[in-house]
Length: 477
Image (cartoon, rainbow, N blue to C red; front, side, top):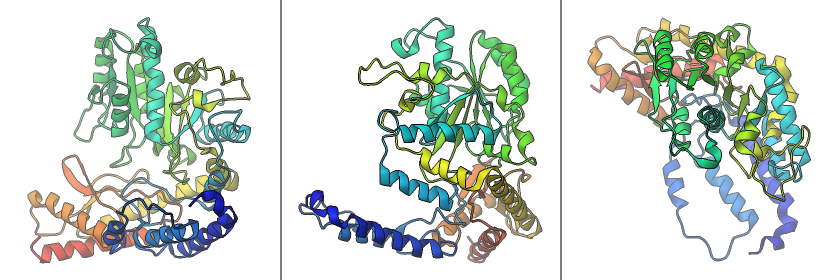
């Protein structure tokens, strides 16, 4: 069926989605996170491409049906397994507008609106995080892409210190780029290094304990031994406990050796919003590049990230200069953001960011962050009060690291027990928080960053873990 024949039904189809949205959102607080029978519904989707389409109305109706029966409720208040926020009302509406207008977001010529909103949103984000207004920046699809962008700029800088234009000539003939980090280094950083040709296993980890905390003296020695330009990655918010690298102290070491400091602040950069946690980010303005995620603690839809760089020219130098005649030269106002980051075709992802920042302002986002700090602290207290739960790290941000530990279970069996309870928890679906392995222990690490989440939701998490745990112990695991 030619879509041109269906022009007249567009409004009706969108109305059906809006009606479904009302029903979904009215029940999302209590909707199970994973749904029984979802696997069977998903199996139905594996069918050949139809020769004759069924039309927009029937197709969208079917999509709404399978979504209602099989979608993970990651936008709800009880999805704790990953650091994922939901979408605030303003952000969701902004994302709908982005889809409606389908702006070509990478070029000023194609969308002055998208470019202007990106410029404004980046300025607001720098203000929100306390970063200097003079810094450059660009929106990305994720923190992984933000890390990739910042580290690509670092790679260009590093090669330039060796007298090479890595963008034109590549890495051939250059020595290995030294990269140093604590044990908190996230896989997304390694993935970025893998893509950049540096190597995911090239990171020299300078850790002083099994938790991964930075060994500053070793970092100092390693940078001295490198004998040339190097890159250091600091973590603002480790994914298992929410702990931070000492950014200011690492900046001291980097300054002494002339190293590039990149800060991975995927969710931890939002600690800047509260006076209670802002000291964790001391020294972040001394970094050369800083990466963060929007679909985590900003609570905007996937896909959303951002990177900021101290030198506002470095992104254009790293990703621009294509020499294509149909791309006009940029100035301070008419910016082609596709020349400031790795993407050429870019969605207008500034719209939901602008909408949520405009809607709730600094005070609203601070209130959300501080509420999450309170909810995480409350869960920590619930864990400490329970006789069969064990808190494994102080609660300093939005992640609570704990395990199920009933009386009578030997230490050597706790990892297997917690892994089994974690699998059962994900299958149960009332709440969603599987396990991790950190410091040699299998444990839970729920992340509280969804704007809907309350103390009641985390109390249910602890209750369900204990309920499922008792079943495994009684059944002999």
